[in-house]
Length: 554
Image 1: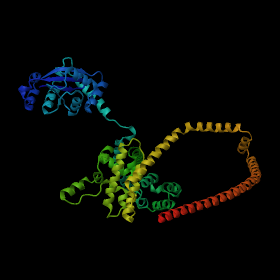
Image 2: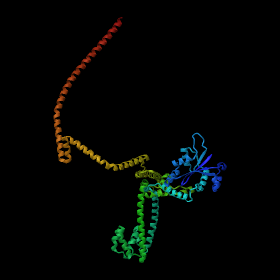
Image 3: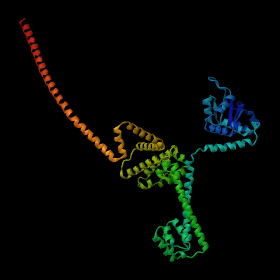
Image 4: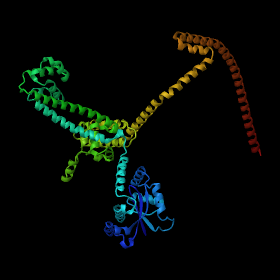
């Protein structure tokens, strides 16, 4: 059986025919030995056809389709032209060797060409890759490397398909930077306290906040120059007048040593750096909150922006977090404790990064594990909704948060929570309502002119009716005229009622007389019919008696 090899390069598709397979016996070791030597391998593999790509864009499209296991039209035409034809019902006397079994199965489905992908074929393709430049005559030595480099760059760029507003890498970097900033700001603030305490040791006991301490160290500079004239500025910094007075009094009776002007300048510069870092930390926190609301709004509304960002960064991406089961998400961040427990056969950890959530802190010690399990379940649902939903809404996260609150009440007070199906149905309904309202707000300006035209039509219709129209138009002009028109209408109605009443009474009287006459005739008819019935019954009974007597005499 003949074996053809399909080799995909950055410059085009190539087809090789493998000869002498019966002599080799499909032995991979023999192929390995013959691969390094071109004279021996040239006898095994021979180039039969080569299809170059038209452009770099065509090469990128072909590379994408091959990597996804899809056969393009160009590849199909190339194979059908250069391979023997496959006739239906007859046994095929050749096979096609491919590097990936996925594309081989697709080729077989479409063209019915039998494909194989095994270790023997891979060794042959390795030899083709090694000596490919020698098989094609017009190909120069550096051309193939340039084509591979360009295609590699374009393929990697095209493979990174993302939405600019939903890049979770930014969240991962921001949360890492936030953690390092917290450590650095704390260590630098302690260094400012220690350094400035040589000059003004009493200030450290009065002011506990690091940012305010750095601000005061920069403002006070030399304690001997601090006087009551600077009280308003001190109160602006501290926000408390009593503390400002305490600082001024402590500066007067301070036990610290004097510093030279150069030392004070250095302290001031370092305090300014600490202030800048802490301000940047605040801005970074705001940036992280907005980014989390764009990328994972439901997870952020359920568990908080910081904890959600830590979970995403620990998992590697939002997609990886969505793929994690809730049991993995529950102990995410406690891997050391888990493997230690597995080694020592101790108790496994109940929670990892999820512990920083407020829900587990609010739960009692007995219910912390249950609460962590339930919260991990809801977090996995929220992460999957955020990852795979097209429109970002916080409806599902808010509903899941309500469920966690209800579960806390159930553990503490015994109040039965709602079912998950009912909550999800309500969430879907509210999400659809939000979408509908958004659509209505967009379409509202186009609808208003139609309403105005309807009003105009109604006015024109009323103008055709005579006096009734005049009375209806007056209320829009003047309120007094409207009241007069209403009173006139009422008077007309009352007159009509008074005129109708005697006519109705007359008709009622005639109707009553007719009814009495009809009732009397009906009564007479009824009595007559009764008498006739009685007579007929008596006659029938007399006839029966006569017949009986005649029978007895006989």
